[in-house]
Amino acid sequence: MIHFQPEQPATGAPYGEAVDRLRSVRKALALVEMFEGRPRRNLDDITFEALLPLSPPAVQACADSRSVAAAGAAAAGIEALIGAEGSGEKTHPAALAVLGDTLRRDLAGIEALFAGRA
Image (cartoon, rainbow, N blue to C red):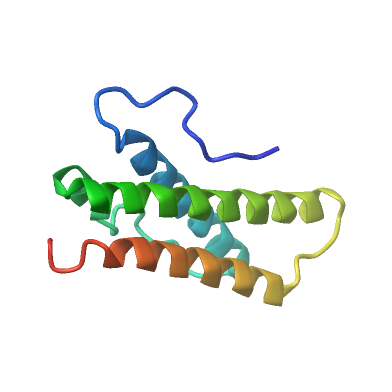
């Protein structure tokens, strides 16, 4: 089973696991976009991870909660993609579009928590 939880507990900061999950979701989105045939994007374009440690505790808690949900969606979607590819099935373009849109929406929602703080 695929999961996007940190392999080792985050050290030092309570937001460390959220940052790790958000990085994993970005990587999952890059994989989905590769399946869709989109050009590869720079994974460092999203900067909210740098803002998370500087945010108020309520924003950190919200980002952490949303990162759990986004990581779950990413893991389930990628597992389905790999399962289909492994069994020789062609991934349906609509399924890729839904997964990609979901991950982009999840990341955009988390980014919106930090709007105006960059």
